[in-house]
Image (cartoon, rainbow, N blue to C red; front, top):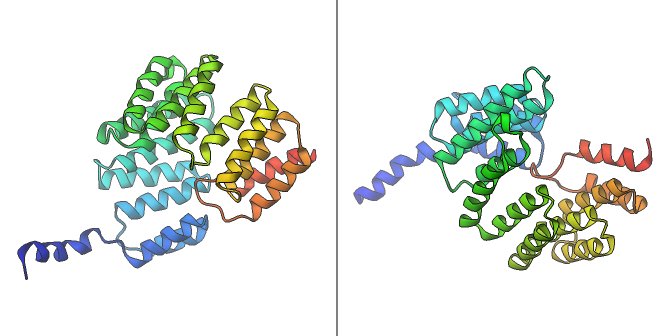
Length: 283
């Protein structure tokens, strides 16, 4: 047997995921977090990937304190893993959003530090760059935020993915109330990625925020042509209608469809859709 092939075969057990871990990942992707956790708890000894998926399950269940504790174990197992550090930052970010005024600043600062560390470990980690950009965009200066930092990060994003770069520039322009520039970037992103359903959705949400409802509807229709059964589209459209107090009957039907649709961890949870549905029904 050639030495290279032999070395490859010997290395397989070191990185190949176990059937149990793959089963847990499948359940996670189908948002069955409790079932995923049940399998993960039986995998011994746990390693970095097991810790990561366990933390992700707790995160999606809204137990951000427990998620942070698990992600810390993942980082301890592999300190150079950009993804583990990113998820740890996300957990602290959620803790900041849900904690008291006394503890929120500390948790927010930790989130920023971990986002920055994740990008340092892998400057091409687009998820880490996007989360860091959002932090800089939204956080006040005393917590390490700032539009200059957001602008620099948007440039980093654009260098890797021009479409995402336009989306980031649109968010930055909107924050600065430069609405013409924001619209231009959103339309450019949609032109450059005609098969990405999120692009016309972003444009539709922006146009609705400007009171340009007819144009917003046209952009939603464009998204529908790309992915007519997209849960992302259903939720976004319903959310816009409810925010603006328009088309509430349609919004309710969209949310009812959404709650029956197969969701992924990237979609808002059904509990959030239920809250919107109650709001649309006036209850």
